[in-house]
Image 1 (tube, rainbow, N blue to C red):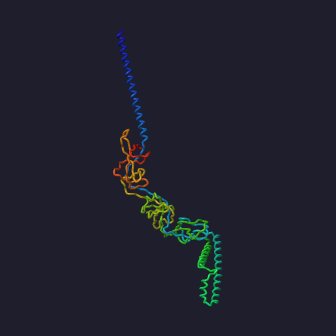
Image 2 (image 1 turned 90 degrees about the horizontal axis):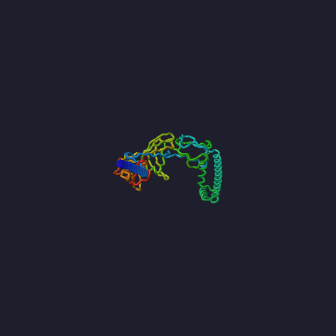
Image 3 (image 1 turned 30 degrees about the vertical axis):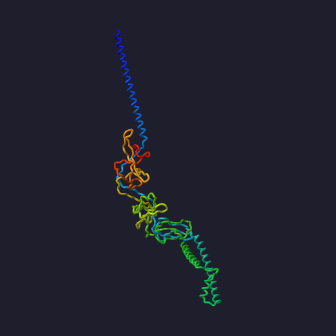
Amino acid sequence: MRNEDYTGQGKNREAEQEAWMQARKKRLLGGFGAFLIVILILTFLSRTIYTNQLPQVSWKYAVSSSINFGVSQEGIVDAVSAQVIYGIDGLKIAKLHVLAGEQIEVGSLLYEIDLIDLQKKLAALIAEQNTWEAQADETQRRNAVFEDDLVKEMDISPAEASRRSGDAVFENVITESAYREADQRKARISSWFELLQNEGRVEAADAGTILEVLINTGEYMTDAPVIRYVNEESSLVFKASISAEDKAWIHVGDNAEIKFFGSKQTVSGTIDWIEEKNGAYQASVWLEPGEGQGETEGSMKVTYSSPVYDYVIPIQALHSNGDRCFVYVLREKEGILGTELSVRKMDVRVLEKSPDKAAVFEEILDSQTRIVTDSTKDLKDGDSVREMN
């Protein structure tokens, strides 16, 4: 009976030991599994952190293409040899009847003179002339009496007396300049009187197009030009100011398209010359006869197309370091987390560029080279990177 109890107890201990071993094995396997999970989580987190810290880049392939671009700029229509209408010195403008861009015919009303101001100044001018003529008459009378006295007292000829009279200095002597001023004053009186009879209306003596009005209503004129115009036989030119930056893309001989604001007329031409003016540049296009007549303003577009280049890249992919130009290209390398992308700095020669593209050359460059166009961080040769999502 005791042997049976002993045997039963042994079996129970073996069963308990087996159960304990199974439980221990399960605990070890569970712990190892948890350890693996933790390792995987830590690896994933470290990889995520590492990856998130990498610069993100976008890229494009170089393509075979031309460099095309256009520069647009507003400008004015001017005359190669403009005509001018001079002001009437000293008179006041009562009303202007023309504006820049208007076409005029012979007899077109240009402006009106202030009649009250004209009458006052004409009266003053006539009074001044009358006073001068009275003084001139008195001077001539005195000279005649002096010459008669010389003939009688010195027994000389009238011609000799006139010569000596001319050599003498008189208080009221009349100079040649005084005579010229008197003649100019008489001509002005005649002109102003004619203007008064025409009710102060100044009319065009020629047909053409007004380019510029140089005076305003209510202002007094000088003898300087007050109106610039071109007649129908004048050659016209379109002029546009361009910046120093645009000057790099515009050359004499480039094709230009001009659209006039007044009529929406469009003409084609070429850049005939470029000159520097006041720190900027001015490009001029000579217009063909009949083009631009009646126009004052417009816009010019200059387009350019280069030859076809093998490798054309976006301009933002091109970098410069002093005299050297370079690009960053993508390469694969083995890193701490396996295969990674990295950038390599590649020097290139710029063949031609525009504001948005550049044609480049490098012996090992090909159409499958991935060229970095943008990055979230500054790059340097050998940096690991990742593609933008």
